Image (cartoon, rainbow, N blue to C red; front, side):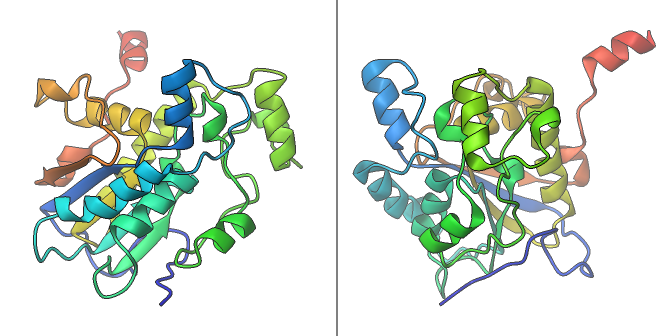
Length: 250
């Protein structure tokens, strides 16, 4: 059974965002890049869109047990990177036991600093994951420097990474993290599961939850860890102040 969701905002655009919300963060299972890096302590520079290892797939299948019994997830959000999307469909298989709705969003892709963070085209992803809808994504949906975006190809983006050393600036990454927070806050669903990455969730937790709970200042999720967060009101996801802008104002 296909559980397709068109690109754009979650929900049908008419229902008010419910509060409080429950947000589950799920880091992907062990990937081929995780395994390579643990063994060699360096980026192979060509492990684009790393897949899950056999252990990672098993972790994803067993992650379902980490959700409360009889829980019904209203919306599953996932990064388009294969390791996250695969974890999503294994942990919450579309169908009667899965989420009511699924949405793929590049906002949740990993901070592009390693070869595994360069993705695949929507056509390739759709062939790998027919349960999910990638039709709203451009061929190159991951970070590309502004001056190279027009006419960029996947191969061109790979060359920018390997030959020119281009990486995603922290400012661009934080914009995506904050846009994800706005997406969750504006969703018409109340129980949301988000499948993404270590750096992405580390930054999200640090920016939005560390002020009230110091454990989130340097919280790094393990492979297939499921973290439940209760969001009492929209203020929980209010964009944090920009220290540089505040300094300039003073």
